[in-house]
Image (cartoon, rainbow, N blue to C red; front, side, top):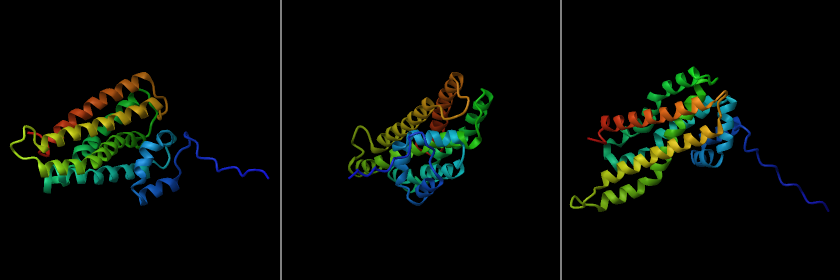
Length: 211
């Protein structure tokens, strides 16, 4: 008897289907696999340029909601302002990312650069979701006599989340998901990352995380 052939998995360069994006909307835990397990397909989806409106909404709501537990642990009742730290900062900087990319010859749609920008916010929020129980425990157990309080540790963890998000953007850059991406465009994206860090730092001061 001949052995049955196992189903062929989707190619790592095959764009995500509308059904897969819809499943992510219905089951947010798929975001982890979407971002960290399907990097090649995510890059192909961005490069394909179709269905990105749905993907952008998934990233937008995911980044806004997943940061809330960390926000509550860090800022208590003011934790609802935390979506502004990542998602708000990214949305402020996204127009500059798109315009500079087009100016440098990258033939891209606004939704393509929007997805790349929101990816930074989503990855940062995912990291803070993992940090939230740790920060809550430290806030409950550390006292004023300690040399470093839980708030300071929370700021450091928030910075680590942002760096993780920027690292994920770098991974996507190396995969060159946008048409006509060149070395000059990638340098501009690195400069944009520095701009995003600056705006996020300013946002942290506006929402009261930093003095």
